[in-house]
Structure formats: structure tokens, C-alpha cells
Length: 149
Image (cartoon, rainbow, N blue to C red; front, side):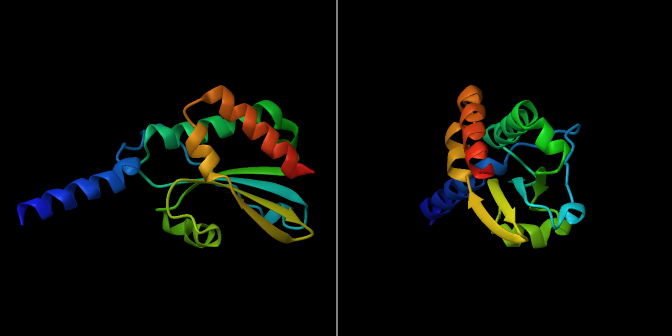
């Protein structure tokens, strides 16, 4: 019986490790609404996360923001690219999280053309490269360039 409890405790710890870091007090969560650009073709970039985040999750968000600010500032300004950081644990984000089937940390792209969504999940890439800032930023730039075509 003790072995089962130990195994369950370890398994629970492994499954929740990504959500074990406390949220930084000074961290702001930006939620963009797309209603003002609803009819405009655009690329929506979503970084989903839970309330508690590990370093990999934080790096994914920071690297995504850096890449967008560095290479796509004009597109962010004219709303042809919309960047949002979404806390999936916040009830107000429930419908959006459901739309993208995001239950935790994820990097999702939604290419909107003529009002039709085309959702692309880049989470595997994001987790693989999140801790290698230069590679992440460079590869994300290439991926976004391709998605904009």
C-alpha cells in the first residue's frame, strides 16, 4: 500500500511539475481582443499558460514576444499580427482555451483569412526550443514568415 502511495505521489509530482513555479508578482498578462479586426485577415499568436509556470513556459512566452517585437513590430501595430498571452485557468478565457483545446502551456497560431480560422499548434516546437533563445527566435521568425504567405 505504501508503494502505491509513493508511486502516485511521484506521478502526481511529475504531471504537475510544469505548473509548480509561483507566478511572478510583477508579471502582467496581456489579453488582446480581436473584435476590432474581426474582418481583417490576420495572424493571431497565442501563448497559453496555466496560473503557475515553469522556466520553460516562461521562456516560451518571452522568446515569442521578443521575436514578434523584433521582426514583426509593424504587423503588430497594424493588427495584421495579434499577440495574446492567455491564462487558461482564468474563467474569462475558458471559451478561447476550448476553441484551441488548450489546457495548459501551448503556442498556437490562428491564421484568419476571409473570416475563416486555420489553427496551427506550434507547442512541440516551443517546448523543444524554449530554452535556446537564439534558435527559438530565429525559427519562430521563419515559421511566422511562412504563415503570413
